[in-house]
Image (cartoon, rainbow, N blue to C red; front, side, top):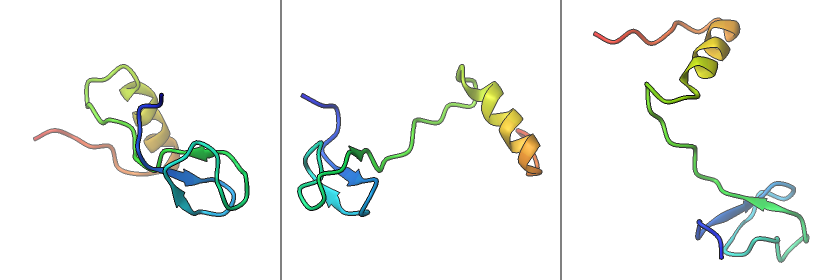
Length: 61
């Protein structure tokens, strides 16, 4: 059993409740973004990516 109820097809952008798209047969993935935690273990990589993209880093006030 999977963790999510809603999936989105990568090929045809249709939403479905199944792991495989019933319209085109392509693989699906979850449309929900990952969890955000400022002090999370992936925060270092997220901040490096923002710096490389030229975005201003988020500074806590």
